[in-house]
Amino acid sequence: MSPRAGLDSQTLVMAAAEMADQQGIGEVTLAALAAKLGVRSPSLYNHINGLTGLRTLLAVYGLEQLSTAIATAAAGLEGDEAVHAMSRAYVDFARSRPGVYETTLRAPEPENQGLQAASEQILEQIIGVLRYYQLGAEGELHAVRGLRSILHGFASLEHQGGFGMPLDLGVSLTRLVDTFIRGIGCMKD
Image (cartoon, rainbow, N blue to C red; front, top):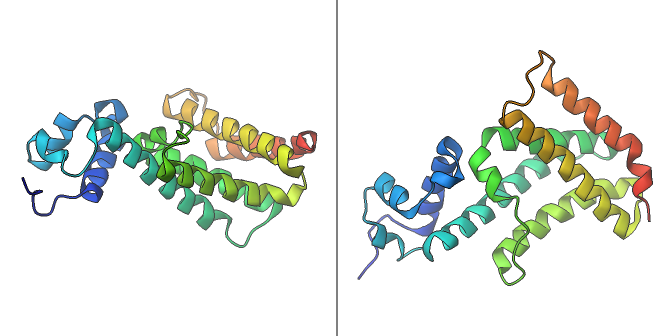
């Protein structure tokens, strides 16, 4: 059986990403994706390795998109400015691509080289920004975990409607990142 003309893994990922952002990652099924694309579900198997394969491709796509957002935001900056720019880009990505963002959260399986490489790229970008603070190798990793926790918590609470008070979210994020930066010295090796 030959694959349907115009249908490829990239087309599937883009359609699935759109569905994830609009409806949530839980709604991305092979049946729903096939219906969206006007094909039968078995046709998808010519391009992806089932739902698990699709979700892995979505995670790689999400990590690449997040990586680009972070790199663009922090380009040419260092220190506090770079951390703030990277943090805003992270939260903005989570806001604008909620379903795709959700796929980026799991630690990659060591045997999945594509997912591992995409995860390591983001890790290296964040470490590159944090290297300014001379935390040492282990300290940088603790700082990455801390910053990621802060940004994910902020983005998740915002997405779930957890910030009901009439305060500017941008100001809250700035103050939160400022607090992280002030405390970063405790992360040193």
